[in-house]
Image 1 (tube, helix red, strand yellow):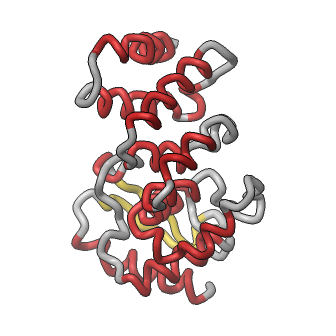
Image 2: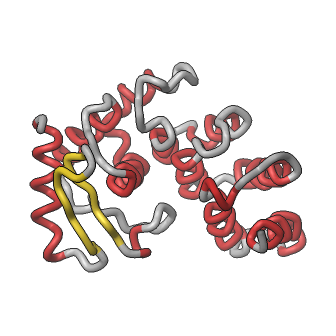
Length: 211
């Protein structure tokens, strides 16, 4: 294992006994240095992140490695690192700002998840609005997380339009997990906007939930 992977394994092993909802932790599993099983309190759109307790120096080391393909980890760890990026992404802002100068993120295996950084970028809502037209299905997890954390009515309404547009096309939200994202956005929007504005996306959700 490289230094970042050793730091990751040490951190996770240290917090496992004292983190409620940290169900399982394994090392050297299926080619990964580690993988974890967490309960629903750590789902993508919740506030809790398994890395909330790490220091800034640990967070920067892990995020730098995450963005440079330096961590061989399972999906659950990657998802939590994306949540960390959405909270403390300014620690790696120079790297992320360079990555965002183009839309070719093939250099980063975490391309599905790196866009959560937009949650802490000053022009994050503007960037997210633009990228909703570009990022393809099943690669929007990080972008959705940023959209969820950002407070922008313009972005929210753009996302409502995009869900409607995707729903009218060949969209497979159950297979990709995007139906769960839509569910979380609806729950958020019901607290912010008139029900009449949400009828279309609510109907779309139940149509696909019944599939």
